[in-house]
Length: 330
Image (cartoon, rainbow, N blue to C red; front, top):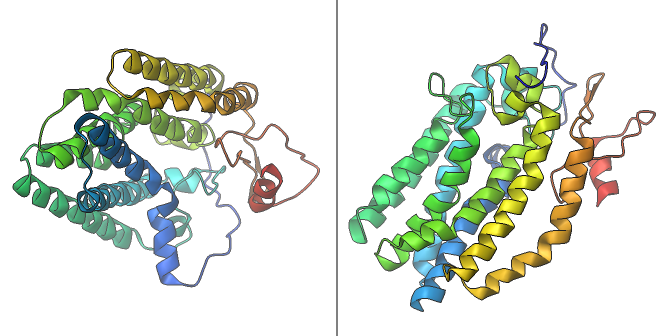
């Protein structure tokens, strides 16, 4: 590995945080509902592509497709929490925050592993049934695409396969939440296989992959200790930090190429308005890649609320909560 990663000799839990008493709210948090945008945006992009290329839009089909992708995403989130808990990855993690480090509900015993495992299977089942309905009524190719997407999520950290541990996790996430989901959505909306839509899904896949990538930085030691050897572990934080701006630059370059090739509409140039944000995020990552600390029994990893990047200003003389840090960053 590119960086010496010390193994965790003793497993020490952080101070137990306060949890909501409402069971429904606990399950909403366990599902990581705020991150469902990663399953919604590719469908919206697929719908926008169809409107641009074919001049049609079906709101009902769009909502049904979103229900299916969100269900698969929920199943993926929960099954990954289950496997990370069973491997003790999340128990060992000393830098857990609302953005990374897995489910606190399993670590603290609020939810039981069997409950989360069954809930994950139910979510996958709901997504599968929606996919089967769409395949039977529109185009049978929707089913294998849905199965492939579900497998990429299930096998991300599943024992023996462990795509993340083999250095394939980032590719699996980018492919599943990008080209595959956009292509599948276009098949649902048109009944046709439009391979150009697969290419149109690459930029959103790269951006969603970056969300995963940046959150691997604080998890590096814990992940390495259980054999979850993703690319941040393999390269070390310093070298891996270079990947962030390179992937961002590649995203902008691909969008420009796709517009010239007439794969996506010229209005996609609006993405250029986000370049200042991309530059800011890249600077934070490049200069603060190693700013992850565990102090006492309190998580002290601070994230930029807009970029999910590590906060460059950490005053070790003050003992403040993660929520206070986010308020300051906002």
